[in-house]
Length: 131
Image (tube, rainbow, N blue to C red; front, top):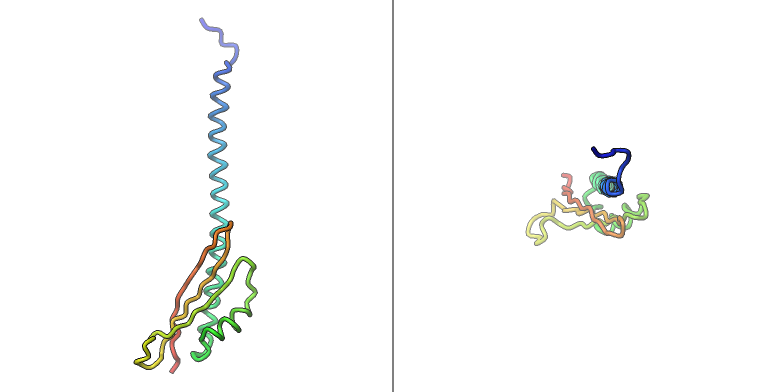
């Protein structure tokens, strides 16, 4: 019969290797979860800014919805965090001007930087002339 009074060096080595693998995998998972949580947070803030601009555009008259007014008056009035920037582009729906100008396409673009990567959140909406 064998004497079972202890553990061998081989058993200790194998158990340390297995434990190291599990700790590494779990640590990597926690890091990825934290990274994804922050990315979702930044995307939610960008969405908030874009929706706020879209709602404020709905309150404006049709004549005031133009690139100059929105980019020089409306956007600078917001308290925007340093990592974010907002740009608005307005163009006529009927660009060949053969019909009456009743619709404008407004593109709202929120740019932000996250971990040295530039991300963009963009939405488009229609502004309809009130009759």
